[in-house]
Amino acid sequence: MSNFPMPGSPVRGSKTGKPIMALFDLLGRNWSMGVLWILCTVGPLTFRGLQDQCEGISPTVLNMRLKEMRQADFITHTSDGYVVTAMGLELFAFLEPLGYWSLEWAEHLEKLNKELKEA
Image (cartoon, rainbow, N blue to C red; front, top):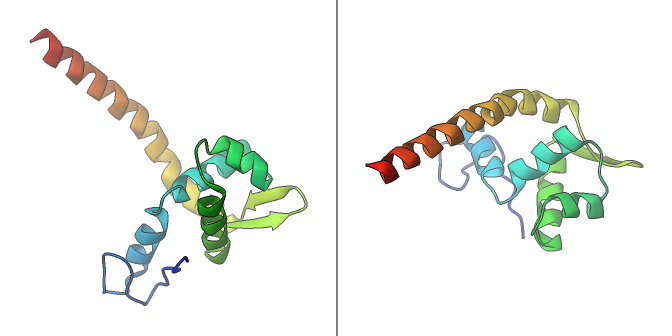
């Protein structure tokens, strides 16, 4: 069963109640950021469509993440399927630069590994 991390309350890894720690707890759960990322980049998806995009996610985990993301007001369910809310889009605006940075990081690691193999 999911235990929703509420700002102001102790959460996994922190007893401070700080909102950032609640957010880290929520986003650190398996598939949380993946679900948000897919909905922001692909668009509205049905449960089945989202499950197909999240290769390997179990229906149970997807249901838990969707419930938590809805409770956080990051997504909602419409006749078109699951869609990102204004709050979810605002969060994505902070996460999107990490996507670009991750490409640079991957290149850096590739070069580093190549150099180590050649040494």
